[in-house]
Amino acid sequence: MRVTFYGVRGSVPAPGPTTARYGGNTSCIEVVLEDGTTLILDAGTGMRALGATLLEGNRHETVHLLLSHTHWDHVLGLPFFAPLWRKESQLLVYPLPTDAQERFQRTIFDDIHFPVSVNDIPAKVEFAKPSAEPWRIGSATVRRIALNHPGSSQGFRIDDASGASLVYLTDNELVRGEAGEPALDALARFSASASLLIHDSQYLDSDMPAKYGWGHSVIDDVLTLGVRAEARGLALFHHDPNRTDDDLDAIKARSAAWLSERSPVTQLCVAIEGQTLEL
Image (cartoon, rainbow, N blue to C red; front, side, top):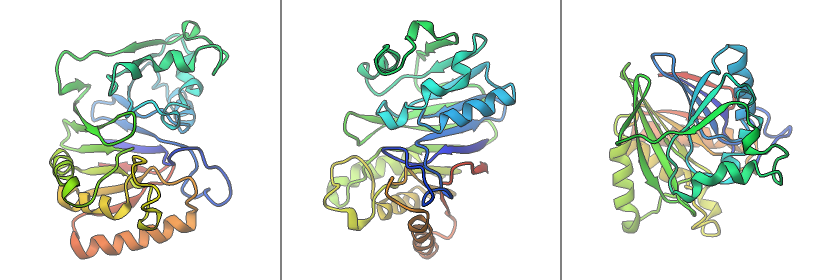
């Protein structure tokens, strides 16, 4: 399984000189399975560059899209996804957290928010309706889990035939203390022994309590989840748009030290736009 980060920022794009190393595009990840099937996790602004890469490699004809939810930072890249404007392309969109969210494509392509109507898209866009869960995509089995985020969100676990496993949990607020233990335990079981766990890591302790209830996690809580899950790799993701490259360097150093004391088997990654990991 090959995992490439095309957008790692949360809430709003954050381009500029202070974010150039880690990247300013919002959530979008490409996953290539053992059999060559292409999955995309979220359709943030990083999806624009991914579309160009797929066209260049002639890998755009069938693409599978898993969306955590439809807040703007997770769908803004979709109108600029180049394969969408090729009639030979097929985009399969899998079930969203709620039926209401499945109407998102008409919200974007409504002649008001974007100048092209949904009916004028050349590509074939379908909402896939798996008959049962978990479901199969190419050589992988896909499971999902409900997350703690305003308006609802969902996470995914992708287990490939190669033995590699990826868990994607973004826009999720881990709650500390007894109130949060049931959810933490459930997520740890869902993520157990994952090759790579990617988790929303937007906040620091110093951001609280002002950001409590906003639907994003404090980094120390994410590290705790990684240890509980015994994940082989843990990627901090959905970086706060105000976080500079230097800030993220400091977060990486502190988090790596924290993990080395508690779980030497878990390798830390602070997600960088353009970074590829082979699982």
